[in-house]
Image 1 (tube, one colour):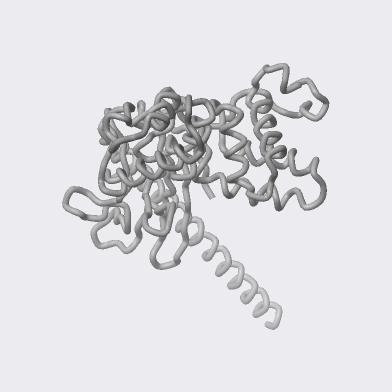
Image 2: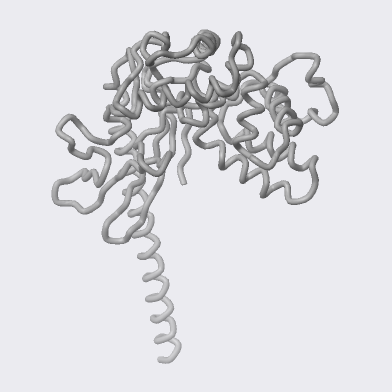
Length: 324
């Protein structure tokens, strides 16, 4: 009798565990499909973005439709269900949250010039000196496959570099690990810190041009300060003044309809006009690649699944996909 009782208790416990596992698998599957529904909704929003211009007061960025109704929060697949999916906003500063991230608002690792990459490195890790920032820039160029003999890409230290274009942003972390490992101890933490700081500044998606309507202020500072180095009669002060003009114009609701910024901004100086002429080949007013995070949550168990992806609106192609 005792043995039968123990056997029954064992069966009961096993059945309870199996039931919990089955519920978890069911809820996980449901949460994943909720997250997929969020991706599909975002794709429809991306498809509706005007082809000629992309800027931050559009629905993809604000999460609000023309009636100021939130379209990315607590999306229910069934009217009477509490299960929902959410598009998670990105916080870029203390004032704004953007629901989709325009990947072409950043410096493109595959196309940026060495001086732009060096300034990017200084933003990623303010502790590096100018020599180290330039070395990180050179390492990025070797990784992406530049054949400039001055880079010495055949050096033994580059034997494990892929030497072709970046496919995903995370490859930058690998480059940073190589750099900091050569510097000594604690390199893993330093590399991760620098990589975390690249989130709003660096991308590998798109053709290399930066959207002047959406560009992050730090990324714009990189472009303008590098432009000032090449522009006739221009200084870093001219670049800073131009940066302030552009950000002020955008903060007041202005959007650029043309890359001829000098025809839109208020009274740029001659050196600032020269900077604009230098960067003209590096900027655009539209974008094709958008990053989003969609999370599905089942109400009764709190089980969640998260999908992060980059969607190219040309044919709604998936350029990047990651599930937690």
